[in-house]
Image 1 (tube, rainbow, N blue to C red):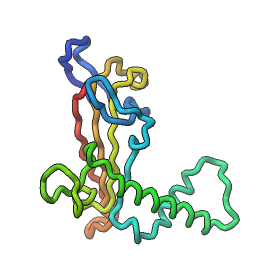
Image 2: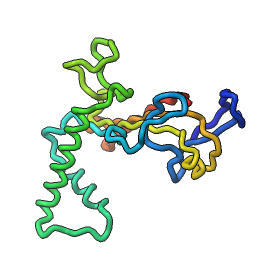
Image 3: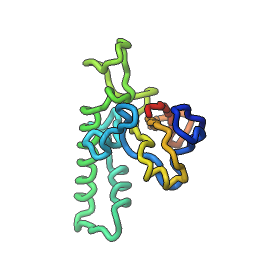
Amino acid sequence: MWGGYVYDSQMPELRVGGQRYIAGTVPGRIISPGVAENPNSRDVRIWRIRRDYQTVDLAAEAIDVFKALPRPHPIAADSLAALAKIADSLRAAYARDWREWPWQKGAPFYDINHNGVMDAGEAPGLFDADQVVWFVANDLDAQVLLTTAAIWTVGLHFTSYPCRQLAMPFFPTKFWATPRRYTNKG
């Protein structure tokens, strides 16, 4: 949730928005004042990368995906083959997200030469994390805002990128850092 005074000559000045149990935002960034990206565009999605996607055993993730399938779901006679197929699709998705990483939209990357462009030899990532998830959303859709009890858009988009360290020597659990950047673009 967020709230604050917005001085854009529209009333009311005090506005709130965000997420509760239901999302009060829609996918995509704001590309010009009051205009958002098409949320159905192929490059408006949740992006996931992990450095070791080419070699890691994705069986545990495949099991999580399998468990999350809608019920009832067909269970293949050969469950190992079904899990292998899911693992292959996860690996393909990681490869696609690595290859198409949207650094131009603000997705984090290691900008070694500090020129703001992801050049050859630079890679997607943040905080030396093993895995990064990135997305951008906005609050321009007034109908969606009504689901969170907000009435007026702020004209805001935000990016979020949870990170995971897979090998933390002092913590047996996963570590997540979630920095967020808020930008008034409305």
